[in-house]
Length: 245
Image 1 (tube, rainbow, N blue to C red):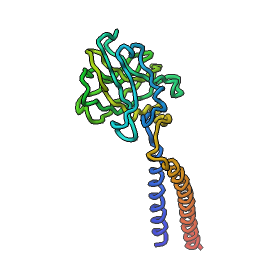
Image 2 (image 1 turned 90 degrees about the horizontal axis):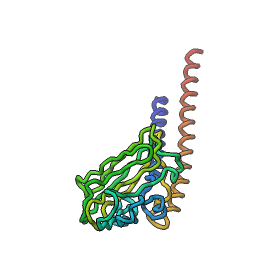
Image 3 (image 1 turned 60 degrees about the vertical axis):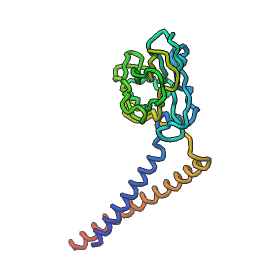
Image 4 (image 1 turned 120 degrees about the vertical axis):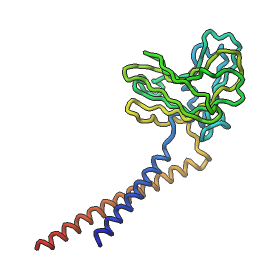
């Protein structure tokens, strides 16, 4: 009976330990770019012909998937762009990587319901040694969906980006992008670059306090589990020794 009780205590403590570990992970689980602020908007560059398509990017506070903002891509195309598409991109060096070989970019996107132009060929892309792209679906266009693209491990591509078609004259916000997650070649998400906005002025302090308190509880539970396991082993050994005397 004592052994059963001890094992039950160990299991309960382990379950609580796991729950707290998951909550710690969730607190810091932010996308590489979440576009809550414009602090890292300059990381995203426009392609060479973007000015002729009137392409602009900004933070939109009303159309976020979650958080405080999303990246809005605006076009004012008069019909004189030299190519059939333009766009925005991020360079691997911006994230401290030599290239995007073996990396994956995942984006959440939502089309603007009032856009009066053609966005049929909108896509996410990677450029460098090879050109690859993934079409962005217009099905259920006004709700957030996800799309991703992976660079082959033997392709030292240096760019991830989003293409914007310039097929017909059009003016307006085309699409909103949120929660861009870039995974390295090991499949690990690159941490948020610093465009995450706390929900209120006190959240940062609350976060620090919560993190400190959680760490203390985390350590205490770990110690308790170790002591319970050690106690269980000691009890079993002592019981066996008594039997063989």
